[in-house]
Length: 99
Image 1 (spheres, rainbow, N blue to C red):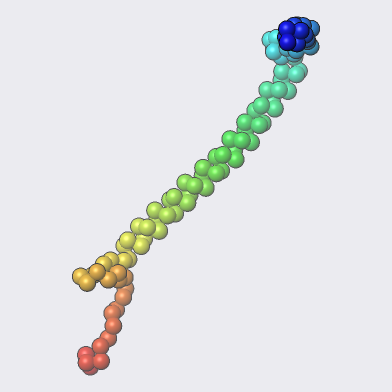
Image 2 (cartoon, helix red, strand yellow; image 1 turned 30 degrees about the horizontal axis):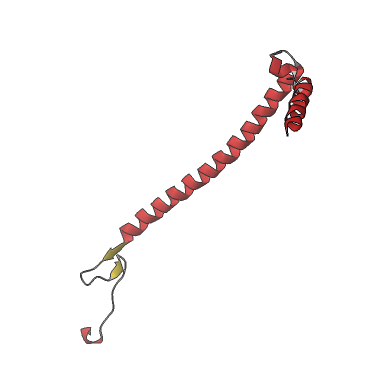
């Protein structure tokens, strides 16, 4: 067990040089790799933000359409004295004895 731990620690120490940072991580701000990575990040954030923006705009549009439809229906429909749902344009039922 101790050999496995020493072997693992030795491998980590040997592989440390392979895991060194690239020039961008070291802070070489004028490298072309840094400019390319910044452009790639901007494009990815722009695409993601655009898609999420369209999804949010869709839900806002649906909410506004729902509110508009609700207001339109509340102006046309009412409940009469008997608890029946009626529209304002409804003429009612004509009885035969009204002639």
